[in-house]
Amino acid sequence: MVAAPMAGALMRVDGVEMRFGGIVALAGVSFDVGHREICGLIGPNGSGKTTMFNCISGFYRYTVGDISFEGTSLKGLPRHRMIELGIGRTFQNVALFRSMTVRDNMLVGYHFRGHTGFLANALRLPATRREEAEAGRRADELIDLLELRDQANLPVGGLPFGWQKRVELGRALIAGPRILLLDEPAAGLNHGEVDELGELIKRLRAHFDLSILLVEHHMSLVMRVSDRVVALEFGRKIADGTPDQVQRDPEVIRAYLGDGDEAPHG
Amino acid sequence: MPNIPPQFGIFLFIVAAAVLPLVFASGYQTFQLTMVVIYALSVLGKNLVTGFGGQVSLGQGAFYAVGAYTAAVLMDQWDVPYWATLPIAAITSGLVGLMLGLPALRLGGLYLALVTFALAISVPQLLKYKAFEGWTGGVQGIVVSKPDAPFNLPISSDSWIYLFSLAVGVVFFLAITNLVNSRIGRALKAIRDQPLAAEAMGVELARYKTLTFGVGAMVTGIGGALSAIAVGFVSPDSFTIALSLTLFVGMVVGGASSISGAIYGALFIQFIPNIAEEISKAIPGVVYGVILIAVMFFAPGGLAGVIANQLRRLRAARVVGTGRAPS
Ligand SMILES: Nc1ncnc2c1ncn2[C@@H]1O[C@H](COP(=O)(O)OP(=O)(O)OP(=O)(O)O)[C@@H](O)[C@H]1O
Ligand SMILES: [Mg+2]
Image (cartoon, rainbow over all chains, first blue to last red; front, side, top):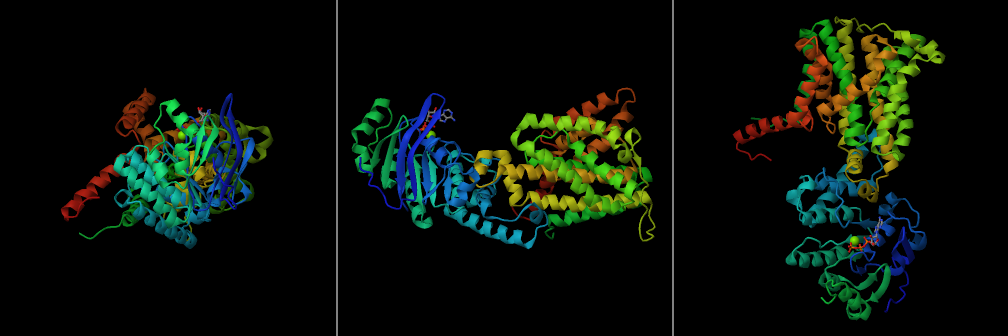
């Protein structure tokens, strides 16, 4: 294991422990995500990857350990504050606003930038129109970038799963996050689409100047795009290093082969 | 054919709604239309809370009662002019809504329904309560005189009250339409569809739920205040749980998450009971029930959805006629 201590990491996860009744979903996990780093988070089913996401974004309240972002602790912060701090996320099973259009879904991602309240919007005061125009411009940029132009005004609930994942990506990106948590973005994609996604992820980092924490079972994808990979098993960290190092790590090979899961060799 | 913007259709509708009854409707019919406007406003407040906000309120009639009594007491005790009672009624009913919105945060779904139901049951009794009798008039209620048309306008009191209510109604329908189509409205729909993701997008659930409950109560309360002015009388028995259920029916029949649905729902709750009565004097309730079930069968998402589809089809047919592709 390498895990060189990174001075000035963007996000630092420090000894986080999360229990559900008797189940220990995270048993004191620590790792850092650097500025503009793509960090893969792998592990067999049930190893605690999604739980880690939920701890970071405040959905689960862990009692032991701490998660800090740009030096300030996120522990106990209300969930709706995370986005303004620069933490964006997608969900493993897609959590879109199903009755709303693609464009409106993305606009909700920009909600936190607005300041106008009930009265101003009921009266359509000039300030609301300015906000609306700016949000609309941002949404259109992302709709173009993600090639969703033809679907922009369709209700999102009727789109195929792969496209819904892309809408979710746009909804997270429009906020301009400093770190993006992606939970299995490649689920439901075919081989060619997975390759495209890999390119897209790298492009997003360059374009938006952000860090990415990537949970994926698609090993070839993780190993190709990640600068660093952290591996979990039963809520414990078993490896942390470059993709090469982690792929060769005996613990990781055992964890995957022992599970009969896809081997981590790309 | 020139391209007609939808705003123009709405404008025509408002003008027609203002002018036609003055010419063609009798005094009683005008009063009935006033009640349609009042119900439409009241159902609109409920749609905001339930249809857009996703919170079930079974006690919307309580806010209507608060608005009505606020207006009546102000006119009766302090000779406040009828038009000046509206903003005050808006404040009182809105405040009651806010106070109820606070538990609305903690209580999800069915519990909130129960709490609002309990409120609706207790309101008539509170209105009869001895300690408040000096203001509320107890069981007797309060009689207020109906306002005449101002500026010597040559129209009847009923017609004036209709126009006044219509103007108030139009203002609030436009305002709520703006609201629903704004960042606030999107946040409300987001909370309804997927509360956790809405929070991750920075929407503060507690704040939005409470405020929505307050605004919904305020809009319904204004409906109530207008009803006190239009009917010229308030009494505890006008505001039983039956009123809350009537508003509930109006919401569902019209289409809960729709603005125009409030109008269709209001037409339904104002006229269908009378029609049922005409069809059968013996069992009007049964006829009403059958009509209700039939409507829900043919328009499961509410009348607004069906009517919007028909309008779209009409428009598409016209667009095809000009050689443009329907969208
Ligand atoms: N809300 C919860 N209540 C109870 N147990 C939970 C909860 N969330 C997660 N767990 C448990 O924590 C463990 C880790 O689950 P988690 O969803 O984090 O795994 P994962 O690594 O994301 O798996 P997958 O690859 O299948 O998505 C599992 O045993 C799971 O059952
Ligand atoms: Mg998971």
